[in-house]
Length: 320
Image 1 (spheres, rainbow, N blue to C red):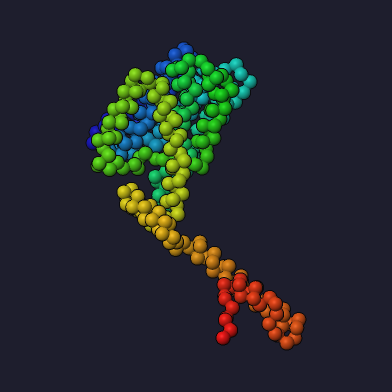
Image 2 (spheres, one colour):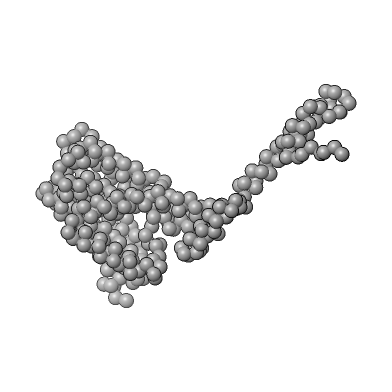
């Protein structure tokens, strides 16, 4: 393979970096619709460079470092500066908000690079920890999308813009699991409906681009509760880690059917908890029995014996 072809993924990453910096340039000129377009080009290039590197077998250490630096500039520094120039300039805490957003993006990328070298459960590759960089840049632009489509309103005032930027920054550095679309596999029967939805989304983005971007951002936010539920379910069911998605649905349906029938799954925690409770009851039974023997001398059954039987789950023998 020629050297020029192997440099193609890094060239795409450099284009993403230049697009992010161009968004700042357009913001200084007051052309905020071009800022959004430049951010979209940066996100598209960020989605392509890694796949090109894997397809061409051109992955390298310098490419990984360049990708992280490009993400920091394109999705951290550039959106922070655009928000500051658009709505936060001249306010007392506007620059502080921009700095917080950029720093949280740097921390999020540093944590992502660190987790690559850490052994994790098999299901962890299906999720990101916190909101990823391109999605955070998309979410941070919600007030700007609303302003470009609907005009000025309460969403374009400095306070809502600053508060929303801080919220998105918190989502970046949070421990919330978010969906990784790199591992999503589409079943064959859903390919045609998915292509129709892609066509509709493209039509919306062409006709009303800023409204379409706002809808995409809101849909992404709506997926976070589902992703949290899915992450929790996989953590509690190790038997489903290596199972395809269609078979996982079958496992979920079988678990629901078992709950409807009143069957309990043999969870280790529940069994261990019952065993510990039984051991504590036996120990209390022995201690109280020894106390009655030392106190009464004769060792006859005292009034606490029925209670101890009840703690152990024993029934009193019927007299014949």
